[in-house]
Image (cartoon, rainbow, N blue to C red; front, side, top):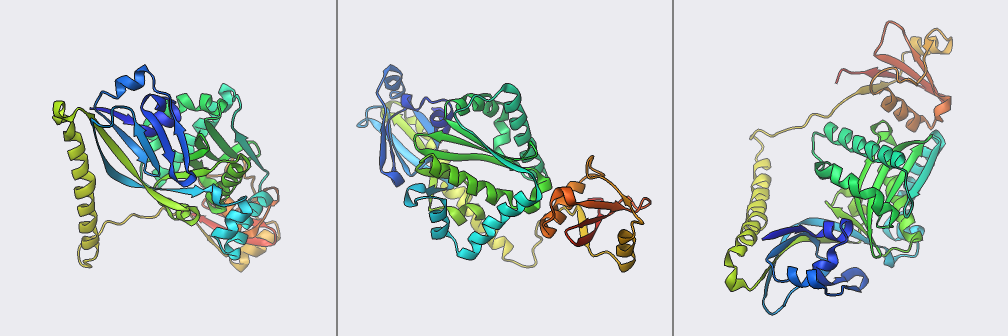
Length: 391
């Protein structure tokens, strides 16, 4: 049985017409028809499986429907925003969130722009130079790798990164993908890469610079993405796999990813059913049972539990009166923030900038020469002491 990635055929290779006769997009009541060709006819005679099919799409696969044996298995959940329900970003936010929450989201963006020299770039239907494209993709990979190494987790996008990178530049130029970048003084600090098909946008991967962890770049990014989607008159913003908290805050609906097994002339190809049976047992029996046993295990208090230690890079606290007096009388050494005095210094400094609402150019950094792991940050009437740890 030949295995296909439905989303790869649809979004990257643009070969979905060889596999389908039509696709009905449920939330928008849109139907996309494909002309039947020789390759389409040949595929229709072969046993095959299509993985990662969003079930809000009703697919008419190629082949004689009378003779086709077709079954599906649910894999995992995804979510989407139905942009057609709203007129613009303001309307979307008003219907989704309280006025207090909206004010908070807008304050995140204002604070970022107050502290840093921020620019937003939207790459869609443009010819990116090889140098710029490589810089952005390498930056995105570094952002994702650093974030998930810190979380001690793996990111699926990194498993086939070179193949992903190979196609992206051409897809952006042909308006089949979009890259949205937040820059600070010309340096990318947040990058999102989206695939585009028809009037649908698929939020494939996002990454941010860990130094800016306190600035809620994820929320700022999703707001500018949704605003961009409205301006370009897209109908669906698909948040893809995983119903994380930030996704559920904005999502209009959830759906299941499914794998479709299609076997023409079943009596002649009965062994083609083995893959369907194995997958059904795995996702319909094994994983649900494993989850139930996990809940039961963690509900028993005396059994040992696995814990994940949280990384602590620095501690921010109030300076002593003596230390504050030394800073006031210029009795400490002032040092520049660039080059970075030590590892994770910018993360701590930007944390201070976020809390104190100090523009970067107004930040003052002091150090006691014999104490290499203690720094004092001053700006906008605030003074904090930062102790760095060895973690």
